[in-house]
Length: 111
Length: 282
Image 1: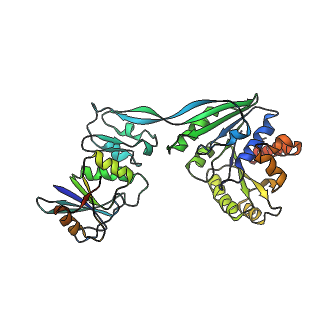
Image 2: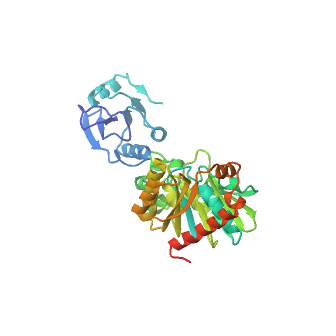
Image 3: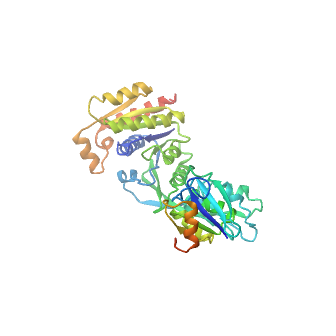
């Protein structure tokens, strides 16, 4: 399963970014193999409408699950349409800690 | 002649100036006014009359699922996030669509066609034989105000004299109103906000290369700051309307100073002549 976590920088030690479409980085973790890819968000500082565009981006990247802080209205509708379950975490966690929290089932699903 | 009455700051008297110009000029010639303040149209309040209403529609994409291969080209092209290609479907958010047609253009499968969505309406009225009012009204909850402005303006096309009542501010709807005009009157008032926003609006008019003049409303009789800015920007002050209780009284009961006072009627006729002169037109 590929988990996408919004982050303030690259890698597992980066703090989680609570904003979804304006996150500076997306960290993709393949839970089966442990493979990690950090990708800079080209739409981080862009104009409006970033939410659905970023959903398309992470869907094309193969994300099965999203872990972030919160979703804007348009992003929320798009992520549901993409059938990617989204879970809420906080920026006190690092990406690695958020991944562990997701695995242990303690994160709340954003519905 | 296409003349826009704009302001920058809201509530300075754009509609007052547009309505009085329209009334004064319609005494001797045919006038069409377009209320481009589609989020809060009010020019019609000065000319009560029956109106016909037409829907203002915009093209939005409809994707044929039989042809679509979910390649993602349209979603990558759309800078507004209106169309996104997800794993099993094309996801469309009509509010975000600017009707540019880009998704249809880039689709390699020819799977996108236009369908039409109503985002507002345009009201047309003829309160007197020589005066036609056209006013855009943005639908409740809708955001594509420039599309309604464009549609209202299109209905007036071809008339020899069109006066556009612009929305406040300097945003997309104002720029849409100013596009294609011959000249612009900026209405301001003797306040710090009036001065500040006049400079912003003047910069927009300058970038659009529109000949521009200024009307000072609710003048304090001195207007030092406003006149200073006008000198710096090279903008002529074409009219001054005093801060006067008798004017406010007429205005507040929906009246027009150009209807109730011959002096104001000829002053507004002269204002129009001066505005025509700005563009080097007779």
